[in-house]
Image 1: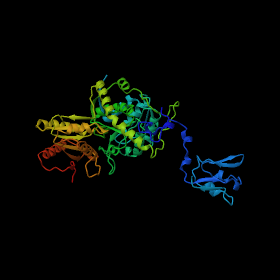
Image 2: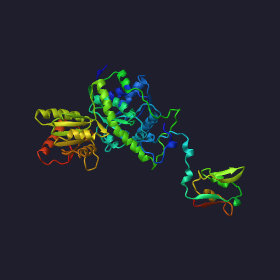
Image 3: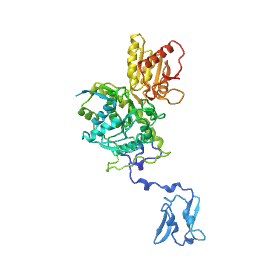
Image 4: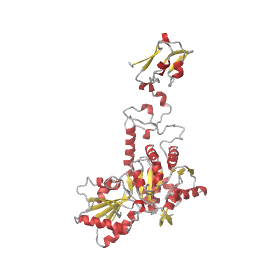
Length: 101
Length: 392
């Protein structure tokens, strides 16, 4: 049985399982939806008050928290929507949206 | 052991389904298919089959439930007509693209409107591009034989596509005729057990079926479907031969009737072919070299066989029992005409839309077409596009 993880983007019709059947269950975690984003959030630690409002609002669960503190953003799953930036309550924003490198 | 029986087309289809004994049937009644489902539900109630019979609330659900059952790995069937299949339309494509070997009798009936319950081929033509293999029958015997062979064709590992088994509404479905039925053991040995490559109940190798498929692979999966359709022609020939060895009844992609020396010919689908054969026999007695090409397999289209059968003729009439509003004849006309394009010398080819909404097709009707072809051969003017027998 074909392993979907081994299917290359340029695989031909003869090399892939018929009908788009996915033969490797649970492979969604291999799929980096963060590739889609056009704007990248950057956490500025010195402005952050660790209110975690960004964690509450993030639709993709991308805000990483440890011991009650905001420690970073998982860019593999963040789609760059900018909600964290919008909801951030500090006068000088603790999350800013930048162009990707 | 063979049994000779007097059966209607619907009874013959129901009998074939009883012998196939599918795991699941999900169906909804519609004229003129109703009897098939009704008779089959009797078999279920009487314990003559092991089938899980799902009574659904619509044809969309009938095909959807059949798809689910087939994806799970079972041998699943349904049956419908006309508006019923129109209501299945989007799901027909899903059955084909998921590569599910569903077999479905389609008792051909005119599509509304105006509302009509009688035979024409607009329903099947509407599903022409859906990815289903289409078999066509001249009579109840062929409907029975096609339905059983369809199971093998659909499930063949080189094919895995759904098959629609067409039968003219009322003319065949409700007409009583003497036919041969095989015994149950013969049929069960012939069809065997379905062995799916992929199925959802295989807990050792879990899979996802029918996922989103975008710009990067959708095209490749469509090519796989097209390749399977192309391969199915050889499989259909192989299984037809096996059926002939078993029953003595011979099938191919098409049937040529008195074509060896024919100068004029008709190409048609379904019950009209039987009428044409009688007309040909009468014309032959008068020295007219008339012949018939009966299409048994409309999808995949037997382009080479058609070219070979017709290349030596002088004029051909292609009969379409449905309007396609192209102002260029019906789908069969256009396919036949295109098949002849590569021939070094090709016959004149004209189109007849005929028998819409169950309008009776008699010997006189067919004889009129051959008379037109004779005039065409003599160099007289005959229009390319004709509506046969319409009051105009």
